[in-house]
Image (cartoon, rainbow, N blue to C red):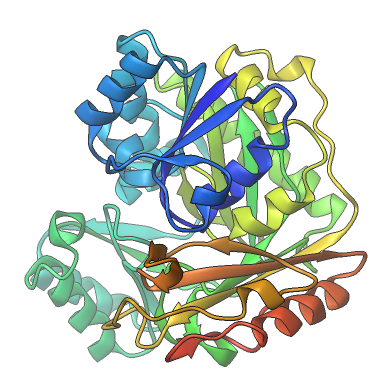
Length: 416
């Protein structure tokens, strides 16, 4: 079987690395891929949002399956375009991917179907939003309605910070069209947990729990990022909580999307907060999370191609998905200055010295025979071990074997 994977980050490297283990997979293309993905797949220079270019490539090369990983092409309807061209594609159609691409849609869906989440209001006028903030008080959460590379969220501890975030998004255009509308949410407290699930629109099978670290610096300080690391399993996600989430959140979400005429097929990511009042949905993603995927897929003990196949054919209920009992830890090495200004083209050394981890490439390129940085998040150093503490120790041991100019990473991944 031939597979085309869409995307260029650590998540896609993890997907390609897992797919290549399948005895059914003979060849993998990745569009556009990166310096690390090139070791397991044939990279093709087509951007992930080039719907016409990807569709034309698929029609010409006839992959048996196209796996669309990033949020933007899903929201733009790449799966719809591929299916219209007669190509089998894994991922939700645009009318289902809206569960991520519009936070206001997601909140309204949860309100309509009684899925537990934070109280909220939606605004397109900054003055009205500011008045709402004054009424509600702080702390409070400001979210850009659309896709903002995981950076469109401000947890405001003061009224001034909250109003500034609203004005920056709506009036200042800091997130472009994605921030023209904002969702203002009640501030919740409790451990955060990420649960990813395969679903074919009727059956849902969860993956092991994970937890990511969004803030740039240790102790959850600094600006939000796309993710500075992740570990699996969560220390807080018990079997009893998992059962409660399945009954109150996971299955009701899939059923709600089906009732709305938006059946969801692919990977649905549930960002949860375990509050004293019970689990609450913080966000949905319409795809594999990043960097959680690097930790979670490292624990998969089944054939990923067969899972994708079953989801597309709506026979997920017929297969068993097995997971290793081990724990995993992924530490992201980023460019200095990320998520704001950073420079590219820094030579990465020490990759050949890694002993206990797999290094997933997120923002790398090959240049004159050397691996260099080409993005904000550069590498995801991921270790698997019988216990989480051992996985953390192994991952950091290898982080310290890798170097590039101004490399930045958190020192507390997996600790909280």
